Length: 232
Length: 232
Image (cartoon, rainbow over all chains, first blue to last red; front, side, top):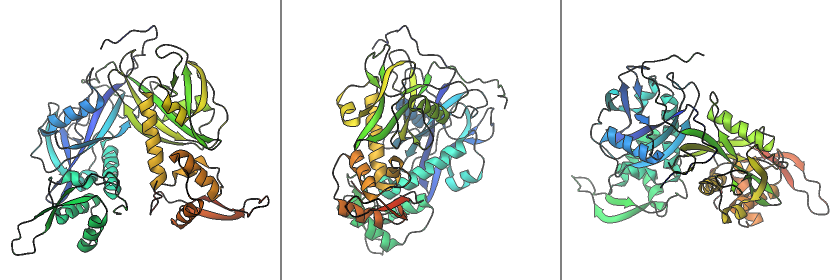
């Protein structure tokens, strides 16, 4: 499509637009976030969220998927949603930037791939990341992403985004425990998730039981809102 | 604060950043949205959401409040939250723009003030606005804002943002009915909102009863999440 020109042009205000990604996964029962160690100033040596500039003819979601794939090697099967946009005039000492942040929830992935401007990328436990000081306003973006994920686990089936396609209630509970950072009573949790209509669909299969009782396997149902919610 | 300069500067990608506002209020029992009739091309003569370019040293929320005050004459007492950011490369025929959209919920306001690039501004019933074709991607932004407001009335006390500081359950129900565009059973609604802990605080006063039974007056409690939610 040709872009028509009008007498009144869009002002070229000097704001650069970026995307930043809060990518969560669960490793060894712990909620982890993908961080890159900055190789260049500003904030050289600090951990930062992966991200980059939006290209000239690229939609915001396309830019987010591109960055996700560049950093992790995968994009298919990853839940991606817009988180919020951050535009404090002083958020980047190099000049004015507006960053559209995205929240991605991924089932277990391999080791991340370092981008060109990053000294190294790795999965860091969220608890550890929040104790340190991230570059730019990335600490705030991470906290906002964490709160979004925690809240959405209450009233949507989004916890299943961390699971393989077929999973047990114990696997699902491990997700809730990792994201909410607290232990849940197994029987209570089992009752809640199996009583919330449309949340889980039994596959008819069970886990291989090594000694213990085999567990039912489920896949995600197609409802979008949990009613009643599973509250923290 | 001085902005330090680094060897690596922020690229000047030619993207202009704007804010657009979805401002809802309730007039004559109907949910209304603030629209401006465009005076200039593109989309001259079409209704559009109010908005404008973010200024050089202005935060995104500051820009949103400024536009709100320019259009309505008020900003105090209005609930304002970021909705989402829209950046399709072809969304504006004049050139590349990224728009950070904001949702504002206001108690009854006076007539709006037309901005400099608008032929006229007015409160339009949302039902009517959705039937027409708004300028740019503003139809989609309006639908997203409507869904956000509808969903938040379920699980937050946000309906009170449309009410005066002290209100009756009947006034609150009129808000729910206007936003959800459906009638609610008065007794059921009364039971739900008064049984949701912390939602409403009785003031001890009642309405003046002209013949009928005087109604209790309430103010908003300080909880942030309704549990159980008031479902649609």
